[in-house]
Length: 179
Image (cartoon, rainbow, N blue to C red; front, side, top):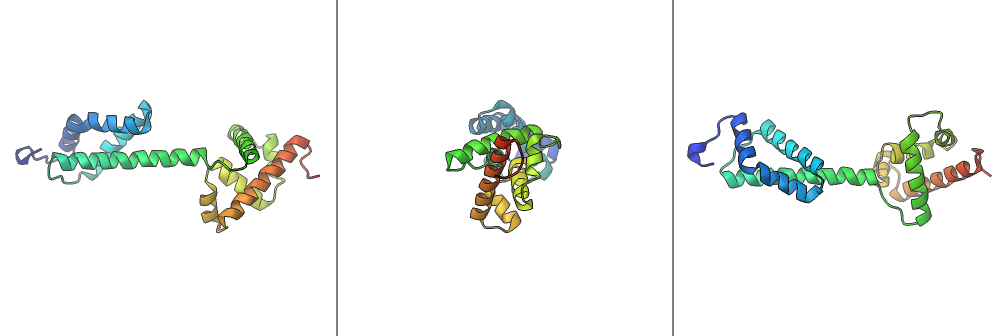
């Protein structure tokens, strides 16, 4: 894009950028996320952002850097969202086993008020119910929950672990009350 090829409108800028750098942006995204459909989504987001913002570029290199920087930010956002979904892996293997068990149960039944696990969750203290919901249903990390609830991070982790242990006992007993 030199001075004679000055791009005047958003549509022209978008068409030029896709034609000139579209393949590069897609390959970059694919090399980062390793999934075609995700790379395609990122590709689309980058060019939508270009169309919406239509910044002024000095030359092709400036445009290309902007596209890659935007793609990089979209990839980072993808990884951040993925890490929120997979949550933190706790150090204690029994915590991990209980967390995996509860995650599967919550994923399958959090909209079903009659499900056994949610009957037991209702028996927890309000604070424990809040933590279980935020962690398993809303998929916040313990650090995010600590920030939202103004609780110390270690307190959130401890209370969440205790809530999981109590739920495990409830489920094993099938009675829904403590020993």
